[in-house]
Image 1 (cartoon, rainbow, N blue to C red):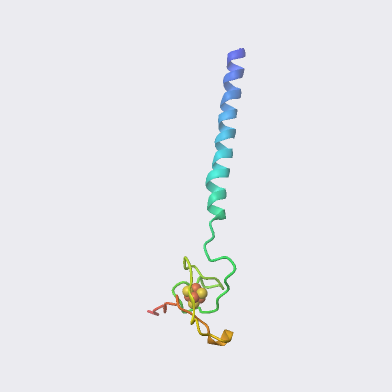
Image 2: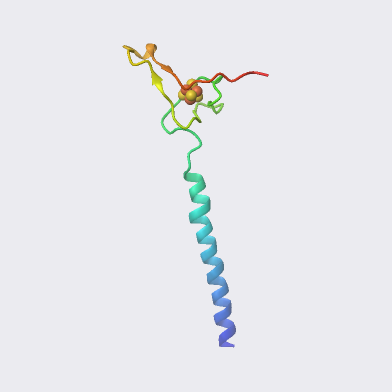
Amino acid sequence: MRVLIILIALIFLIIYLEREFINMSFFNMKSEVPKHIQGISCDVKNCVYHDGDNYCTANKINVGPGYATSSSDTVCATFKEKKMK
Ligand code: SF4
């Protein structure tokens, strides 16, 4: 009888640890991976990297040119036109 109780307790422990492992290493990791660049808000919806809301999904962006003297001089050099079909 004692062996049966220990066996059942072990099964519950294994199930609990497995669920904790899945929660910590799988689901949390997935939710921590950003699908867009954090801190970048973009309105250019006809760019292939635009997510349709206000975010950029490129791995990184380059903004230029280096001789800009105001924000209106700057452009996103990573922009790639989304071809409409
Ligand atoms: S690459 Fe540039 S233009 Fe395209 S979505 Fe990202 S920030 Fe906007």
